[in-house]
Length: 95
Image (cartoon, rainbow, N blue to C red; front, top):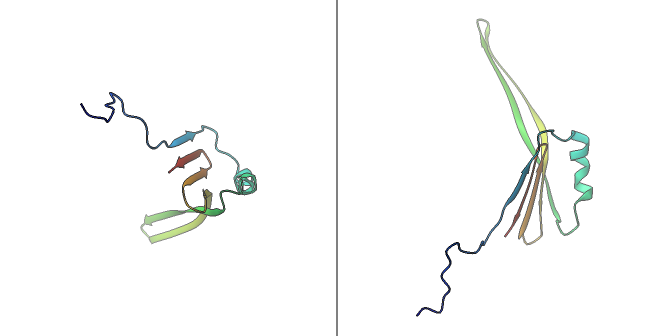
């Protein structure tokens, strides 16, 4: 007989919590969030995205783009925990 337990549903080794909200948070509140996160998340990186608009017409092609603040990525120094925030989502991943 094996000394290892046999599980019908094995125990969880990793859990990722991801919450999505229907009303996005305002830019100012998202910007201030960096000051509200505990200091153990010492690595703080801003997340941005590029929005591009491409137009094609009889007079030619035009491209407009802008960089938009999209949230924060917080990590502990050893990167064992990651917290990611965006306008309509919060995700937490322990390692």
